[in-house]
Amino acid sequence: MKKILLMTGIAALTLSSCSQEDVISVNDKNADNLITFRVRSQKLSRASEFSTYNLDDFMVFGFKGDADEGEELLDYFENGDPLKFTRDGLLFTSEIPYYYPGDGSWLSFAAYAPSNLKMTKADKYGGIKIDNFTVESDITKQIDIIFADGGSNLEPDEPDQELTFKHALSKVYISEVRNSDTRFKYEIMGVKFGNIHNSGNIYYKGEKALNMPEGEINETFNSDGYIRNGDGRIALMPTGDQNNDMEYIFNAPIILDKSTTTADVMSGSDTEAVEAADKTGSFMMIPQQLSSAFLNEEGELNSGSFDSGMSYIAFLVRITNLITNEVIYPYAERVEAISKTIGEHTYAWAAFPVSTLWVPGLYTDYLVDFSKGAGFVAPGADEEIVGRPILGREIKFTITVGEWDNGGWITIDEKNQLGVDVADDEDPFGE
Image (cartoon, rainbow, N blue to C red; front, side):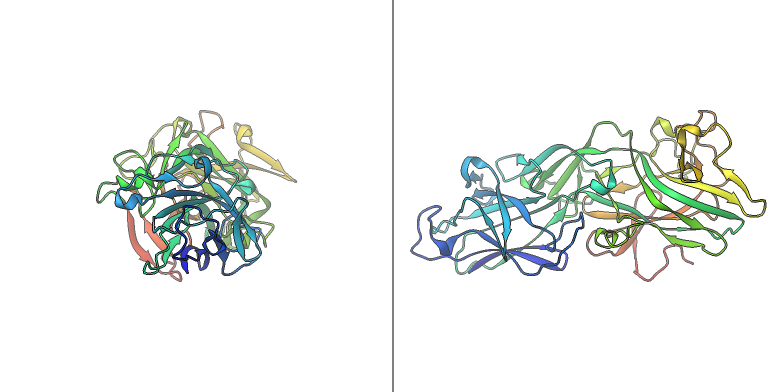
């Protein structure tokens, strides 16, 4: 029995087949040599993130040859098209059955999900790609993209191989907001990322992975301009202009006041999100370097407009002075274009600049503290007040970056340099 194991998180999928020495023809229709997928464990989920629990089907490109040995790959499936493998009880099977060759030749596979994406071959070394993939502007409709690859010749002495499905996009969310200045009440009704890319070219494996110069697989922009994941197998180039917005409006306001100084915003887990109607799990974003236009060497905002290209996070907020009971934001005028009336109250966007690097397969968690300020008047307001500090002071925030599945925290400084590990029970604010 020869198996190719595809793992996501703690659960696993197994691509399995049995080989008989008397099977010598390519694609010999021998039931023991059928290419199938078997699921070890299952759990129902409505999450948009993929795992073995909710993966019902996926597409697989099949090639004859081994690119890791420098071989050019030949199509193994008809017309070079990918096959859909669909759950059938404990197995994943294709409508048109294919079989391993019994002549000891090597087969290579490149798998991806969701199956309704149109991936195409990128090169003769098993690379696959999708051009100008665009994330949904509606966060509740965003999808996860995962890849896996591997190969086997089904020889008895060939060891089993493990493959891990890798996430191509970046997970971005705001897990927590704080305010220890109890003179003010914050009612937060939504969050937005502004001046970002929402589309990109995504490559998996092939020449993009084989031709990586030594030392350049460092989760940053590389010499060819692509952002790569940690092993270099996913390469992504943002496309279009970096002038798009992505927002999410909450079902109910998140309130910070005298009695509540800390509040959860996003869980970071879509599995949890389906259980909590009042909050979502995360944004699925195109990996990219957020623009640092108008930031000086100290990371402070220079004079200029966010509209000119500065990437930012904004909160749809209503701020009340609890001493005077006066609403101090939104302003009475000149912010109508960035305001929303929801229910009985009007809110307006308050922004602060960010220049984080979003990496394929990693999450970025922003923990925001309003205790020292409420940020700046967001783009869209009258030009004279865009970028003006709302309380005369800036928001304090901490960014953590970690592996999508592991959930470990790594600090990142204002220059986007990865720092020391932070334990799960350690307060990133140091409080």
